Image (cartoon, rainbow, N blue to C red; front, side, top):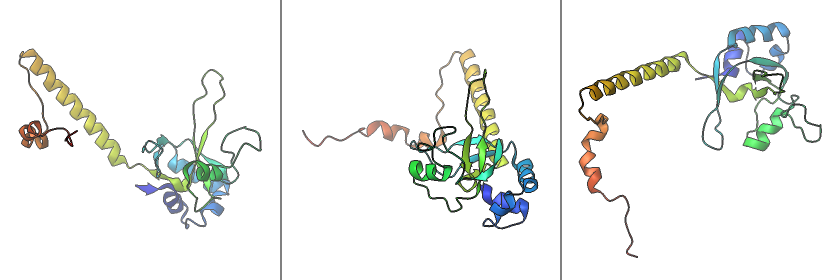
Length: 184
């Protein structure tokens, strides 16, 4: 997967260090946003459960991560910047804290107030199109196996589908105890 900072630098033909200066110009920011809009990204870090968050790019901030408040319209002493939030919450020190952020937008339902989430560019990577194809192929395989299950039900015979890797050690696993007792 390609980091979003590298992709933005390739679009603007600059280095990652000079990307901040280039993104301050509205024309360059709009160019990058047109290329990256509606593409799926994934975080490079994991949360407490070991999962990576993936979402679709909704926008690009006008300011750097050091200026954007992390908790929306919360009062000044309690609100911190996105840079400080990622250090306090995830213990991630950003290499480019002045770089802009990607916006994850939430639809506003029935006039309720919902904040957008901001993610620093350097903590995101683009999801390749090949992985989307793998997911669609996987869903087709699931449909195929469910069709097989339906045909076996019509023939009124019970069948067990076991993966090829599991067939070799199927009998050996039954003979092994699931745990060992130390004698007391």
